[in-house]
Length: 443
Image 1 (cartoon, helix red, strand yellow):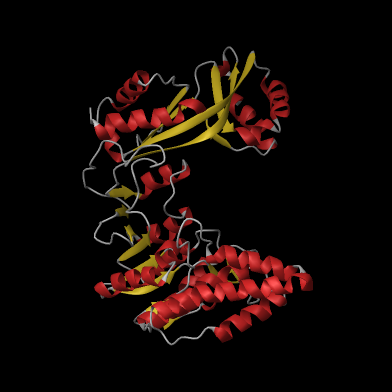
Image 2 (image 1 turned 60 degrees about the vertical axis):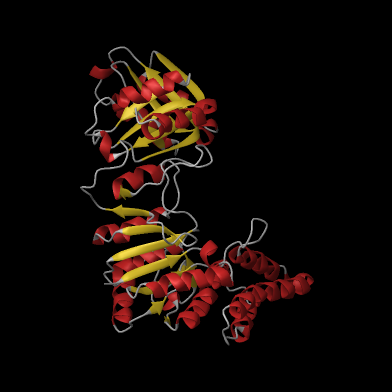
């Protein structure tokens, strides 16, 4: 059995956290490939190493007048690693590595290079601590000249390299361009690296270790102590991630999904917790009718009304064309016989609202156009809803009891999710009401 394990920044922020990660890895012989992030915050007032590196590189760009401050920050970053190394009782010395970094910063080698050094150095420390082989991600993770990830070349080279390597540490977050320059994924990209490695070695499991025990049914900032999700499908996760739920980088889903490799979100500080298992499909009956609730604020709606709209060929196409011409993406589009409503991000729409209104009038000659702002969209997601009668009724009942007015409801044909539109000021009350009826009371 082969497992790929990725540890986030909070899981590797100090020597004590490193020891927890090391214990987890050594507990299971199948945890053979490790993907570390850069050290995160040790306490709320602390600074992540990646942020320190960004700041240090900015100082290097400002030439000689900031040289003293630049040198101090380089030493501060080195001190973070030296503290971890001493805490782990290692004989490792990163002086030469920091000399190379100092020289490359002075040569203004690039912001991506600067950002990647946190993972690179943590990878060296982790490999030394575990006795695993260190593989620089720049040698096995590739990007095209355009900056797009080169999945085919990466999978081929990485699979060949790891075929002869029983145990290895591959730093997350970065790779290399055709000319050898360092290129990073977007923030949170270590999740993606872990997924890429899992695909290359045909792993049986991709474990993603962080500071939470998996996905929660609702945002803990809105609902107090929400229940954890035991098992979630990729489709459910996609719906929740799109509406703002975030534990795993969204792009990390696709490489393992294609291979049918499950992802297990685990908590480094509570390794006994089973966490959340993310799978392609499952026969397991969900604990609750719904899997999760997520949402976003600050949407606007544009309602277009015209008598006999339904008999006018191409009406919707023409209206949507106006939004496309103004580079405005559409979130949802519920419609009636003589009306259609388009939901868009308010900040995108406000800049071009008059152009859009004029465009709609020119395109379809509507009877009426109405705008509404300060709206929120909430997604209620769950594979169990399909087999449960009255799910929509229970949602409406819960919202009515909470005095929340529903502005829109949209249910997909898959019956996997129900989208509800409410006022911004009702956003949290709505989520709590839905959570309460499906999870707390389970009426």
